[in-house]
Length: 136
Ligand code: HEC
Image (cartoon, rainbow, N blue to C red):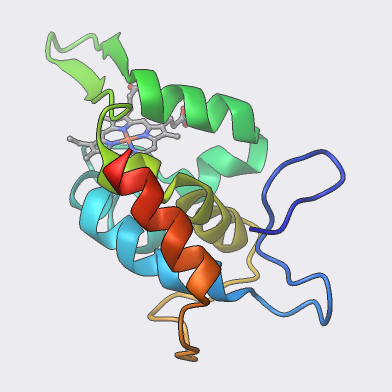
């Protein structure tokens, strides 16, 4: 995972400025874990906000905090608006930096809608880190 000077993960490859491999792959994770509520490619739904808008102002730490701990907001209509706490869900947490960079790239208008092009093989080190996280 590439890091900005701030320590936040970024979708840009430092070498050539292209969108990095991990970000491309996290398109799929977003779609398996978040799409059902937050809509395709982060555009939002009647039920949950557009994360492409949220990340225009929300920073990385706040993003991780909301996803880990969830949030319940009462609405005037009576039904609570519930973001589930996903901190125990390894299929989310082991991939969260990549989900973040994918959404951040969408929010910045750098990553287009649709399935990202390019199918580079997954680097061995990345596969190992993921397996350790999933097993740990
Ligand atoms: C069961 C539906 C559901 C799922 C699944 C879900 N969310 Fe949410 N999420 C919500 C709702 C509803 C809210 C709005 C909560 C509120 O009213 O503050 C929300 C809020 C958020 C926010 C805060 C947005 C803001 O503008 O303050 C973030 C960030 C977020 N979700 C990220 C994610 C990510 C990343 C995933 C997948 C790993 C995910 N959510 C999966 C329903 C869901």
